[in-house]
Length: 145
Image (cartoon, rainbow, N blue to C red; front, top):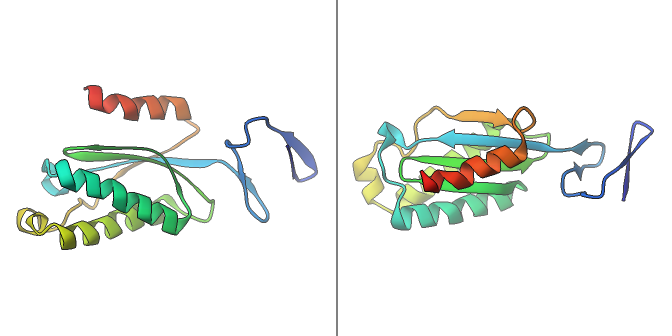
């Protein structure tokens, strides 16, 4: 398959690396990490299971691909690929806001334990400085720690 950008032909046998829009070719990925309020270990059992489902719903709604997701008892690792029209801040607010509202409505014990589900802070790394393979391996290895 060939892609043309500014008169330059790009050849790539692995087209999953690049996506194309109406006027651009892109490969944008973000690795996010964030914690529940007070870093409480509430992301276990049914909460963790439902959180994965909620993230998949939101990703589909936004048109974002979840490449890797690991939910630890006290933090979340999320690696997504998205269109260049999304800023990292927009994405994280969408995922955190939707998941907090949904989980706190469906699981009342979260309301009694925490004033809000998530902290305001988060970590974000764009893929490129650190390779995609390294991020995937790091997230997958989290369960083994």
